[in-house]
Length: 377
Image (cartoon, rainbow, N blue to C red; front, side, top):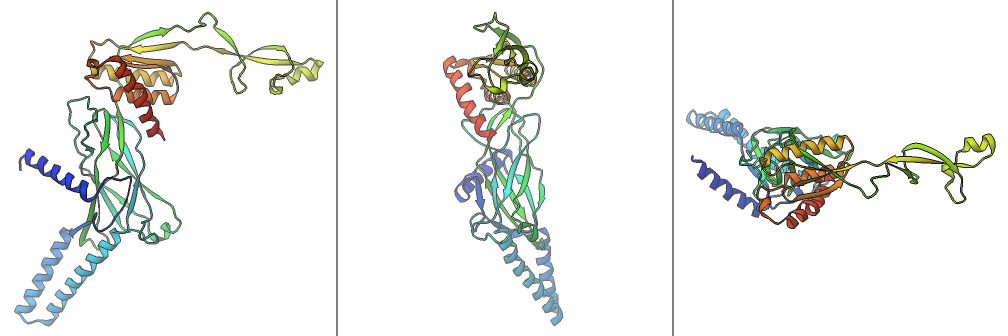
């Protein structure tokens, strides 16, 4: 079948699923979201039952007829029990963590009690695979010409039995996630199937957990430009620290003044000669820099180099900012600042240079900051 026809049928299927099984962070399976058909083994079992019925009718053998009726009865009972077991399943997705496009992420899915059957649990083995890894979004940023291929691998997870479920421990299923391009994406639907108890029938569903993930660019070392940001008191290399929680180096002893906190008093000197002195500490000011790269550099090469520099400078606990093609992030430090920079670089569109610098600055700092904060939570 041509690829265009397959894509058309898949789009029609996804639109129909959006109406029948809407996207949600939490799904409790019911009659509308469950599909069931005989498995390959089930169809073989049905053909065997029909052959026994024809042989028993042809040779007028009552034992063969009885055996065929028994097989059909097992098929009918298994149909109801397989559907009933799968209908007890309820799943809830946690926000996925960001990852680099050259690495593998994961989607955490929790098995929770069903709203209609809180005391009953689903048994068996769940087979999970991606129906479409990324849901089509008009606002998604694709900074590469590569297509996001669908992961066709099936992952199996054994559900806890009733004895473990009685302890009210929530089971977590980690579904691997692979997206080879950078940007912010809405995750697609997962196909979840189960053939418990006899494997004669297969129950499945297609669930959309309404989750988004930011895929960072691949870190790759490259030439970057480092510009030092002059501070207002650059001439003062050493300053006294009055913060009580400071863990800087010891600087000097000063005469104690009334009103100073007692935890800054040097009690050894007080016990030795009765002189009240207070300790002061030093804090060496770190130079703030701005990392940039020439605009003539290829955008993917530049973003990979800035991503590598962001990770390296964060590991060195340096204060830095980023400027590139209208993207302007103020100097800061820490892990939160690193995620803000990586998110801004990952979502930087190749057409950002055509937009105004003010609008790019707003999009890169404020919107990306809120998105990264939400994902970290």
